[in-house]
Image (cartoon, rainbow, N blue to C red; front, side, top):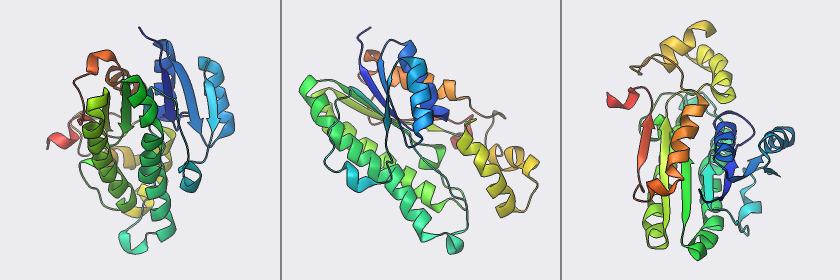
Length: 245
């Protein structure tokens, strides 16, 4: 297998960490990007990769960036839960910067290198919320729907240059991001915290369990492989049957 450079944002924990570990296991050079320096350095050190400590919400600092990576995995994200009429505009703007504007700027920075080499992979960790909506998540849903469009345009423009772009659309994954939602969801819906996973997170899924980060990483590994050369502009659901309804 050809050794390639894989850049994973939000690589210090959760899905990003799982993708970094799987990529290293598959023989690739891994760059772990995260605003948490300790987390980025821990994962990079454990997989023999490189840490890039960066606040991707500071999008002005990314405008002149140039990246020399063969695979870009846009994964970094946050969540805020509140009704629209109570949603903090600053939180809305933060989520759009981090989860839509930043992926655009990173794709923009990575494509020249990919085009020069005639090969590249963009893997966007979207969500079932990139395809469906839920109450109280206006910023997250809006950003993920935007990521779907970004991914498809990247696929169309990248096709003549050997670059593919796809989304992975998981339901609820067992990550710190999901665990932090439990209290917010309990408060917003007026239910006990120990009922949130079953009554809120898994209510639409046919398979009643959280997704494991390694399962998402396995799909990412396929999408960044040569075997996926004809897979582009797609959105791969991994949601236990949520969006089948």
